[in-house]
Length: 100
Image (cartoon, rainbow, N blue to C red):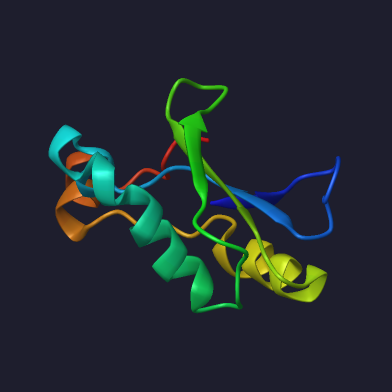
């Protein structure tokens, strides 16, 4: 999912979490910024590659800044609650929603 930030550049910032396991596997971590960038750029142009860090729940999160506040709002509306897991990952999770 994605959420808008409420401080500094808040009108253009989006934090994305709950990535598919295939994206955060050790062998794939190097390409995570590019995958997130590709996903977000479908919604609108962003300023550079997203930065990746540990999220509050221990999982990874990506911080990206869109070039416009409207694109950031569209990203949050479009992606919040979206399940990006593969069909196999959903099956293994008993089709429950991913944790926040």
